[in-house]
Length: 534
Ligand code: ZN
Image: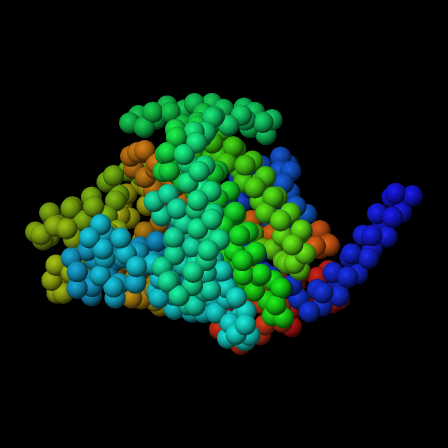
């Protein structure tokens, strides 16, 4: 009898939600987990019991791609909510060199508004001004001005880029609390969340206890100059806000702020859809600091799984009709020292002789030019005389190609002449991938791809033992999950790209995007003859 009642209830609920679905969800929740590679997601998937498990019961593209070559955070975040590759979004990397800047420091951050002078401590004004294209939220607001756009994240870039041009709320973590920089958009609940965070930071944290999923992961690997990684359990001293920010507590705090803003703004309760973007940054901090095959990433993902589950339950209880997409801004490669222990023979650290600094020094010596020849990666210094620039690039290319760790080198004119790739991401050549990361104003003078398995950190240091950024699939492949209430579970084996997320979400809320404006294509999420894509 109980079962019959439950079945009736389920029937009633599902028909009710199907009716709502016809008009589309009223809240889009776009979650990006920083550095959640497809490899690590698939490895832990059987162990998830919380939010990741729920979302894995939706429509799962386990072969998702951040298709471009320079797999960095800013570039990846920009693809997710613009539908464009970096070549079109303009967000090609975390930083680029701009010699037209009047200040001495020519490197700028992807979310820096360079028209505003930096503060004495070097901090910049956070903005989305460098985005060359609208975000999904910008398009929603253009179509239905009452739509609200809220972006919260651990990292400034992970809030500013998805937030687009005129977010209603945009919060990121800075020095022990969540901050924003738009006084016209106060949020009293954010102050409550910050007060709770201050209370949590003031308490010490005991080491986390690894569960069965983490069995066999708790193994220390010694790294010269760093100590050991692989066995840290996130114990924290009282008052250590930096340690709070680089572990599971940070993502929990980010989700708490997201929930508080949903409540304060009553997101998802209007006539038109709202957008909530959540950037979960801790997995990336953990991965860079400890790599991802130790107990640290296991503890981080298990905590996040649980906190994400709590957040989704909160949304359920609020009765909002919502749809979720979850993906990542890039993947990662575990540290080479452990990769070799685990059988990846080609894992190595980048030889210092193949860096821009070393190649530049050799070019300067041979051509009797003053150093530096290159600045901030392979940007030709503005001190190199115009008449000698092509000679410098030619010699640098020759030296790079002769290095055993270099796979390919391309000049700006070569990339500019190469067509933007179309078709499935797994068929893209290396030059295709670099072309999708190319912007004529912002890209370096040489694009260099190192061999597969090369970690782009020559010497490990505290906080930086493993990384991403390469055009290889371990850095490109990310999960893409869609979920809403009563969604029909589908494991989709065909590849999809993160640029496909915007047109797909747009189709769910009936938002039209003029043909040719974005690189992504709508993913058909409905089995059978009907389609969400028109
Ligand atoms: Zn990232």
